[in-house]
Every structure is written in structure tokens, then in C-alpha cells.
Picture 1 (tube, rainbow, N blue to C red):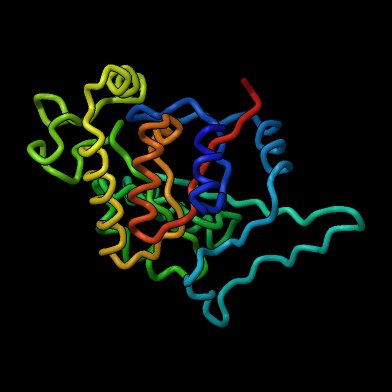
Picture 2: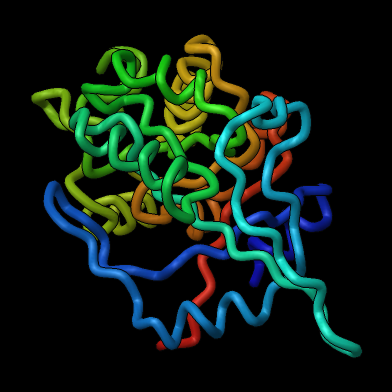
Amino acid sequence: AELVAKAHRRGFRFVQFGVDYIARTRGTSTLSSPAVIVKMVGARRPVPRDPPGRPAARRGARRRPEVNPPGPGRRLRLLIVNPHDYGLPPAVARGILRAHRDGIVTGTSVLAIAPGFRASAPALRDTPGIGVGAHLAVVGEDPPLLSAREVPTLVDEKGRLATSWRQFVPRMAAGRFDVEDLRREFAAQISSAQEAGLTLGHVDTHQHLHLWPKVGAVVMDVAESAGITALRIVRSTSR
């Protein structure tokens, strides 16, 4: 609630309220139940599918079915389906793009530190109509974009990031992370995605680290500096 209020005051638009999940630690993620997803979708206002400035789908591209106007007294609601981790093994990128072309995926968040990001970025850049965001990561994937000398408090003696939020959060609470290291690494990841020719419309973080106030403040700062005004917020009533 604190992060939502702060982002609203700074003029951020909320384009997604994501699905809560058990954080992936170099393996799998478990999504919330369908009932939780339905509740989240039902609580949101309509939002635009594509970020400002993103080119419209080319003529002749596959069109999605038209949405019927809502009945009297009812509001039109829009479902945003946004898988993240674009840039992991090539099959992940191919699956996301296929799900956009032939399914219901409306956007994706790119993981700039992923080993396959550079190779898969051109296909994403050339896909019309798909929204793109930055999936900022300082846990669970390694190495960071910057060197250990540039972000010393984010890595261990072998230059690796914390495995998950379970290791990151206690260290953050104990003051063992320098927020300027976070700022530099997040800014580098956004720059990497933009340099790959991607138009970024939103930001989110790996394992939802931006829900922690100190991290969230840095995320909003670097996003704002990059001209990004939409932030993904996780909302779940399952707990």
C-alpha cells in the first residue's frame, strides 16, 4: 500500500497488478490459484494495452477478437497477460512470442542479465503490438551486468548475486547493501534493453523485490529517469 501511494503521488500509471507466486530460485515458479487471478482482474480499471509511442500492429497482422461493450452499469475490464523472464533460454523467448501471436499474451518483461537476451531481443523488437517492460534483477540470476568492482555490495566473493529474496531481504534490512549499487545495476539493465532497440513501457523486478520500500524507491527513480512511468504491482488476497 505504501509503494502504491508513493508511486501514485509521483505520477506513475499502474498497468498491471501481477500474479503472486512462490519465487523461482533457478527453477520453477508456482502461480496463484485461478480464483485469486479472477479477483485481481475484477478489481482493476481499464488500461491501454500498448505503451505510449509503441507502433500499432502492421496491416495484415493477426487481429484479436473484438471485445463487446459492457452492459448498462458495467465497466469494461481489460486483462493484461505479461510473462516475464524474456531472455532466458531461447525456447522461453519463442514461447512468449508465439503466445502473443497465437494466444492471449499482450506484453512481456525482458531480463537484460539473462544469457539469451541479446540474441532474442531483435525478434521482440520486430514483433508488432506487444508491450515491453524491464524485468530488473539483482537476485536469482547471475552475473549482474556491472562488474563486482562497480556493485560490490550486490555480489559475494565469487561475483554472484544473492540466490533469492530470502537472502537479499535480511541483508538489505541489516544495511549490507548500498542503494547506489542497486541504482547503478538497475539503470544499466534498463539501458541495455533500450540499446537493444526496445521501447520500454513499464518496469517490474525479479521475485518482486520492488515491494520492499528501499528497493521500490530506487526502481521508481531509475524508471523515471529513463522516461518510464508505469510500474507493475503485485496484489493478492490469498494471504
